[in-house]
Length: 206
Image (cartoon, rainbow, N blue to C red; front, side, top):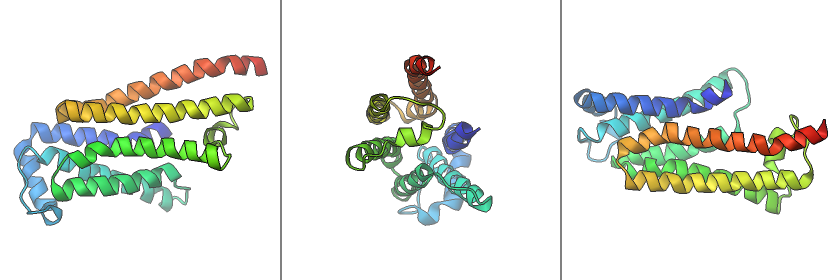
C-alpha cells in the first residue's frame, strides 16, 4: 500500500502526460487557463502543454500526500519532504520557463540525494540508514549491513545516470514511459536480487 502511495505522483504524472498527448488542444487550453499566470511570457505551445500539465499535477499530488498525512496526524517521511522540495524547485522551473529539461533532471537529483544521504550518514555519522529502516525486520552482521547500504548507494547512483541517458537521448514520451515502468522494473529487479542475497543470512539466523 505504501508503495502505491509513494508512486501516486509518478502515476498521475504519467497519466496526465498521456492524456495531454492525446488531447493537445484541450491540454493547451487548460495550461493557458490555469498556468499562464506562472509561465514566463504567458504563451504555451501545444507541444509543451502535456509536460507542463503533468508537472503541475505531480506537484499538486505531492502536496496532497503531505497534506493527507498531516491531516491524519501521521509522520511525514523525510524522503517525502525531500521529494517535495526537489519537485517544487525543478517542477516550478519547468512550468515557469516552459522547459522540460528541469523536470527531466528531477529524478536524477532525487536519486543522488538519497545516495548522498546514505553515504554521508554511514561515513561521517556512523549511522546506517538502511539498518535503521530494516533493522526491526531482519538481523544481519554489521559488515552485511554496510555492504547493503553501499549497494543502495550504487543503485541510486546508477539510476540517476540511467535517467539522464534516457531523458536526453530519447523523445520525451519515451522518457515518461521509462520514468514509470522502467524505473519500477529496475527497482523490482534490485529488490529481488537483494532478497536473494539476504536469504542465506536469514537461513543462518534460523
